[in-house]
Amino acid sequence: MKQSDYYAASREAAVYPHLRQAVDLVAANAGNIAVDVGCGAGRNTRFLLQRGFVVHAYDNNPEALEHTRALGNQPQLFTACSSFESFDYPQAALITASSSLFFCQAQHFDEAWRRIVQALRTGGIFCGHFMGPMDSWVQLERRDLSVHDRAQTEQLFDGFELLDLYEYNQPGKTLLGRSKHWHTYSVLARKTAQGLPASTGSLRR
Ligand SMILES: C[S@@+](CC[C@H](N)C(=O)[O-])C[C@H]1O[C@@H](n2cnc3c(N)ncnc32)[C@H](O)[C@@H]1O
Image (cartoon, rainbow, N blue to C red; front, side, top):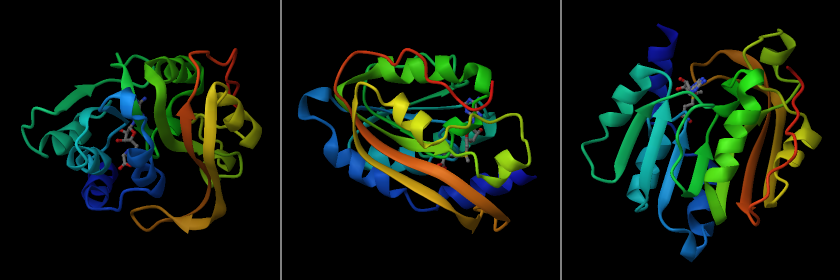
C-alpha cells in the first residue's frame, strides 16, 4: 500500500534544511515546546527530541502515529490523531510543517493557519512547505490541496520576519521514486507580533 511504503521510506529520510536551521533560531525565552504538523513516520519529531524539545506530534493517519510512537515511550513526546484544522495546539517555540500542510483541504486552510499563528510564541520559529500552482499535482487538478503562489505565501507571514523563502520549481521525484514536477516554497520565519493576517487567501476554495 502506497502510504505504508511512504512511511517506511520517510522514516530514515533526511531532516529538511530549514528545520535544522530553525532549532538554532528559536528565541531563548520562547521555551522548548515544538509541534510537528502532519508528523508522518516521525523523522522530524525524532530530530527535535534529540535536540531537547518537548514535541507534540500529530497526524490524521493512525499508521503514521504508530511509527511516531515507536520512537519510544519518552516523557517529552506527545502524539495525537488530529486534522490540521482541529488540532489543539500548545503554546509553542517551534512549529514545523514538513510537506504536510498543503494536504489541507482548501476550505479548512484559514482555520488551520490561524491555529498555527496563534500557537506560536513571539520569537518562535515556523518552518514548513507550501505548494505552488505549477506543481504537477495542482496541474492534474487534485482537489484536496491548498495552493499558494509566492505572493500568497508571503502574505501568510504578516507579523513574522521572513528569514528565508526557498522556491523549488523543477522536475523531480517523490520519496518513492515517482517522477513529478515539484513547485514548493520552503519557509523559515520568526514570529514578531501577535497579529494575524486578515485573510490568508489561496488559489483554491
Ligand atoms: C508527505 S507526508 C509528510 C510527513 C512528515 N511531515 C515528513 O516530513 O516526513 C504528509 C503527512 O500529512 C498527513 N496529513 C494529510 N492530511 C492531513 C490532515 N488533514 N490533517 C493532519 N495530517 C494530515 C498525512 O497523513 C501524512 O502523514
